[in-house]
Amino acid sequence: MLNKRIKEGIKKYHNPNKRIRFCLGTLALVCLCFILLIVSTFTQIKINFQLPDDGIHNYLKFEYIPQIPVVIFIAGLLGEYWGLFTVVLYILTGLSGLFPVFALGGGLGYIFQYNFGYIFAYIFGLIFVSKELNKSTGLAHIILAVLYGVLTIHLIGTFYMIIISLIRHESLDFMANWIYFQSLSKILYDIVFGIIALITAKGLRKILWLILG
Image (cartoon, rainbow, N blue to C red; front, side, top):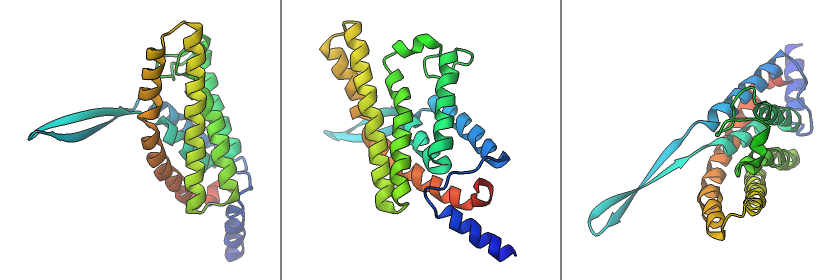
């Protein structure tokens, strides 16, 4: 009986289109991922590069916020349905103004912030990651899923920022600097950490298949 249950559970897990059923375990994971998304918003990873310059070592300091890899992690762990539920819950919580879960606070007026496009794009990034994983969970599809997710988020976020900048009559230099610091300088990190996050999520989901169903 136990062996039959295990075999059935493994068969369900290997079905990429299988939606995770609702249970207390799923609810707990949604809550943990919701909290993880908030924590990642206010977490800065400091990266230092040592650059030799005429015998004098200079340091290039870079602060990285790992929120996009966390979104990719959520897509891999919870799947499209519950992943979307978690991300939309995060966005609605921030826009409600009840809790300042966004980097610069919250409230409905946050839609006019330059960086809101990136937050809104989490929805589409998660969908692209989930759709690609539905094809296969092999390494090639994991890399493609991360590429699709990261590029989608940055493209939508950049486009949104340009629209807000045009409304506010910002200069081209302002927009160019924003695109560089918010996207071009971070895409590679998002891809690398995103791949690590997705591999971790798929492994963790496999371990928790009894809970996830």
